[in-house]
Image 1 (cartoon, rainbow, N blue to C red):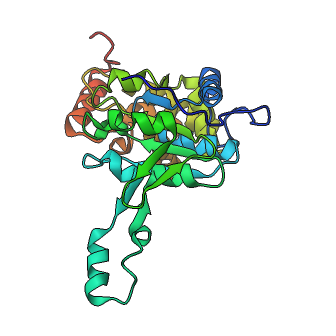
Image 2: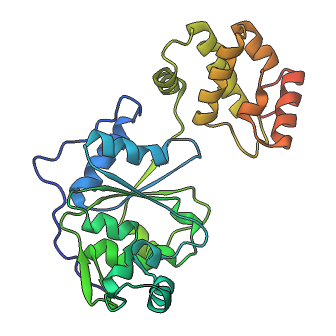
Length: 291
């Protein structure tokens, strides 16, 4: 079925462009993709390894553009209807039997979901739909009409909730399952590459500005070598590196010991088999590249 999206204000000349924030280091291609999605009024679909900053991107966009942030955390049991509104029939029945409320006012028992909140907000907002791939396969398709038209109908009150300004929609996915083609066609897509060592240095410096250069150099070298160990089920991510360097600094570990001993390995690796693989690699003096 084909339909035409209802015109909703997206971006005008007064809308600032996105250039990252002090606490979020964004690559130039990511900044450009954000601006394109905002300009087109399309949802921005973000994929990437866990720990590459997908969720934090929405927070950064909201901060940089001075917009309120609304977060819709998706679970395996989440339905599209949950994001629109919920009709609390149980509370209405209870009030009708035991309370002194006017149960004829059905609107009093309608609670807007996160999508409904974004549509009805007096300001333009950033709406984060986080980890959409956790829901069932039909979940993305069930949102097509609402995300295109920026409105939905509440039959219980015969009211239509319309967005005065199109929200900036950021959708994250860990690629646990494929998303429907019809949904993907309506999105602007970007894959966040894992940061290279130079970018990672900047990211760590944001969180630990006083870290000694020698410790950071040794930690980064060991971290990237560890990621190359073959057979890891879950490679260490940016967030784990940030925790690890903090643990190293607190413990006063000498930079020379980091590569040889890999202290606090459990901060970086969270699976028994990965820890065993890393220890075998260190014991054998290999990096795990093709050996």
